[in-house]
Length: 330
Length: 307
Image (cartoon, chains in turn green, orange):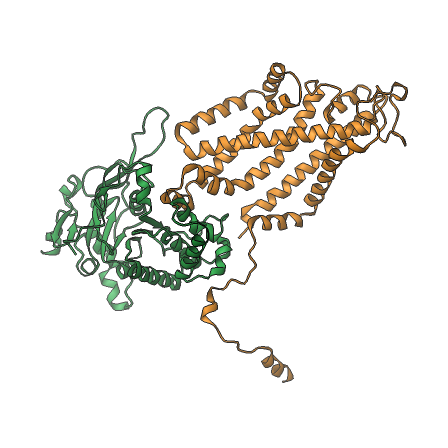
């Protein structure tokens, strides 16, 4: 896997927002939503991105599809840096990267028929017209387990799971290579979650898709991902293959996160749980030092002043912690 | 006992078919079919709409078919009360008021609808540009609106009427220039909330062009607000025209409008009250109907009622 050239590589990606508006000059308050991310995704792989609400997972996904312009860093897609491409140059890559959104109720325009929703990408990129377009839309509908008759209906007539599948069909319509799934299952019932995740896996096998799977449900991410990155306040804390991350978490935050997964055994569960003290720090005007320092039970003085490097401790296992070896007796 | 036996027969197992799980049985109805159904349920609004349609049809058709022309003067028959020959009586120059009412209706409706639509289109355009592109463009447009709203609209209208001379077009231009502000503010507000919806982000990530996003996603979803504001803008325009005519800034005689008829009626109110009452009743009736239709539409278009 490692000698293969990655499909997409994100280098030192930063996305900062200015908060509080000022008429004449830029506001001085900077919200560092994403602050120096590094990761790559191989072709055909599923990369999971986890972290709590507000840690910058969705911003990462949206920056990669260039819904936001990155503040700094590179997004290398198939050898080309797409972080600075103009809107026109970006069109080729818009065809290759697609997105599935969290809320199936908000992600479909209620005034358009299913045909028009799915066909939007086909029309924009002028892939097919007329009967061929309609035929392709029928195929896509059937591919996601819906019926031809649904093509002329409006989104409000469908259930949440069905809507999410329409969203998937729309993403597939222009035959992308990379799909960014922004919490595609968080808004669905558990039974429907499994259905959608299995469909995503089947589609990956069939079409050779690559996924960036953003979620906060750890057990589901473990199930679907090959490698997982853990984010905290805009920074990557730990990155490893999913088995490695679950069996051998090295960062204190990951350890706390994993201990929060409910275990179906009342005796085993209680003593292992790590409770995090304190609140999540503010991403506005951050000071140097480890972002997790205020809540870390191993926190030392230099954690509050020196930003830990994101380094490879074991093969393919990256951690951003000064004391990762000491904590884990490596 | 007999009861229980018959109950057993009431139900029978029909089995389940996995293939039918995705079936949707309900009939597919579009948004506007739904709106129409809810609007027709509202009796007051429906009746108002019918009255309005009748009034519009009559003022379009009647001037062609009635015997008396609205310009024909007949000094021998001046200031006649309503009678068999002159249904609404005659004015001081002996012109048939019935003919003049419908001719005036034409002008009033024409001014009302045209001014409302042109100012509506301008408002939607400016509002959606301000809302969608944001930043400096938004700033500029909104400040222009603030400045224009802070000037009493009568002053602007009078200035325009003075520069352009009185006439139908200059009234429409004047009402358009003062009328788009409200619409632009409302549409901007809507677009600001809509442009962060996921489906707009999807369209952006697909590479759909900004103006296409505006036309296909944003404006259709603002249609409810636009339509309600339009139906409220029509009576305002009609009323403004009537008011301008009343204070003598309206269109030039012998052309007439309801406002002008009321104006000339007021002068002889003590002697011939019908000359003031009849045009006033038409103005009021139209205003009332338009307001009620607007109210009905607002309820019918309210997305909160829809699920």
